Length: 113
Length: 113
Image 1: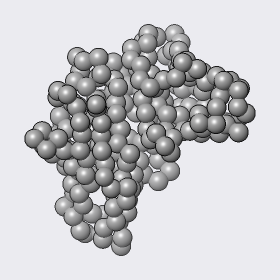
Image 2: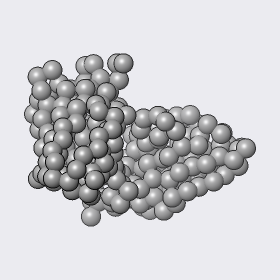
Image 3: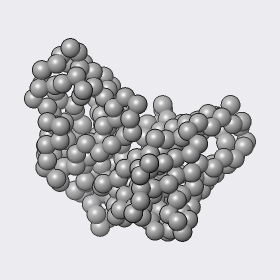
Image 4: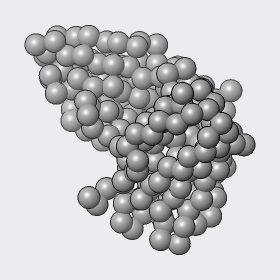
């Protein structure tokens, strides 16, 4: 698959736990974006990395962190999980530093029980 | 405050009828505006961007700065247009908010045969 890939597809965990979501961008894309989609908040931008460096931050909680590795894949770490963190987490990628032509992954559905 | 409003959660029209999905925005300055679409069991994808002025799959969107609107239109709806549509905005390319895309809550378009 030459598109954006995300693993795992589904994740069920308990409150207080920590999880890591993984995203591999399209070949050649340097930017990775993370989004959270929940019923009450809708689709929200969390954070962007461009070529390994953090470029922009949105509504990302302090309990959440991300990084982009030299091979350009990215991981989103969610810690001290709460019930309200249950959501669909999307990753997107683009060639440029702006998201104007971004491509989305299939998402990871996180359920916190 | 920067905001995107899609007043209709659901829009149902007959095949062949005109479609208009409403989007109003609030932004200080000149934003970049987008429409994204998510078909059933598919990824979120960019439908069109206001600056490109293209017609994609028969859809067009006109930016009205006076009314701060960016409504999506199609003269004759087709069954394959049934999907979830999101209006979104971000800052201009050189701004700090270029990457901070703000999405509306989405409108589900249902085309009746």
